[in-house]
Length: 489
Image (cartoon, rainbow, N blue to C red; front, side, top):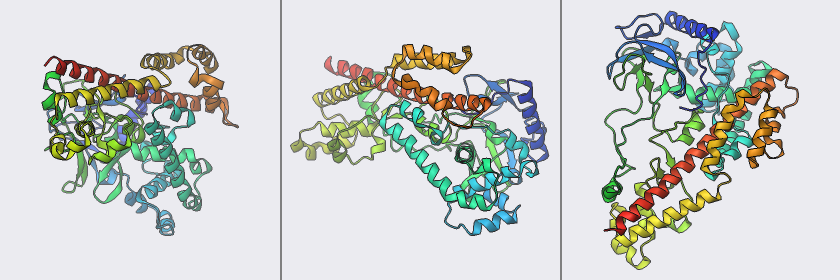
């Protein structure tokens, strides 16, 4: 897992902070299963550090069986719009004058209002433990956005920022009426609250905005692994493409917890067996890496649910009955079922499409010649796409490595000087320095914090585009293997 925005309890102060949170949680009625201690996460689970695998997370302190209850958080400990409104008449009355605000915007305002109370809030110890910033797409500046390089990713970041600004402006009058402190009225504070809600809320049946679940949000993410749609041997090409990526139904839930009315608590369960010391992970649902970056602010280096989209001609879309989001390339480089169906039909002469269209839509290859033509087209398209990119896969790998070396430098300017000698574009006109130090009025400490946040987001952008290009390169190899296999038959 890359860049999840969580702190690592590497110092004594941070470890003491975790202990304080767990003690507070125990007093607030948060408990684990009966077989475990009632203090904090007890003898069943423990908060630990997993470098390179999400940072701070939850470890198994004893063997845990699949389906076992891990954690139970009572309704009284959940932070929801209702729980915040029920405690504050001023907030409740103020909201009645703004009925047009969506449930998520209302929850965001309520969260900032509760933060505004400081130590007077019963959730203050939990708030102290939240990340100070998030690397969600809505927090991206122009530098990080352009670093994504791929048009649809750039558009997603721009859309996220525009949406966040619009929502902030809509809620600003209400926040002023509530007399929030000046720092909590800023767009930066709104982004923080948005990131908190986007990345940490869980589903509850009575409010579509969800809830914040103290301690329950300590678990790191694991992508659902139920999807059997993978390939091992190019000789199985016909069977592979006959599998329907678009209509896979799972008998088990994609998430590992839910609110249970009979016990009035949010309950978390183990989805697999865990050995002592293993990190206990939960699934929030099925997400691509761009979606993880948009909503949670991190990436998975090996995401089985990754989807990579390549530009397609308009006539390809017009011939296809599949939605655009189903026309993609899997993480392993294999074109999706729908993409293959659409391209097989497109590669068929117009006069024959009506008579053999049923073969294309059923996922069956139309002919050897058609299949080779489609694979060659995809391979050439992917090759051209990589050549058009401002940087190559190897250059991106080097850049990520160079970003990691920043800690070895005494100041950012020295690092930028060395990086500029290797990379031109992104370092031209001191773009990094301008983005980092371009805010007037910031003191040195604030500039350092802002710089670290910027670099974290920029690194995520570079890592995303690297993963994108890697999948595209895998697709070229896959198409080449299929062509070679068919040519020898």
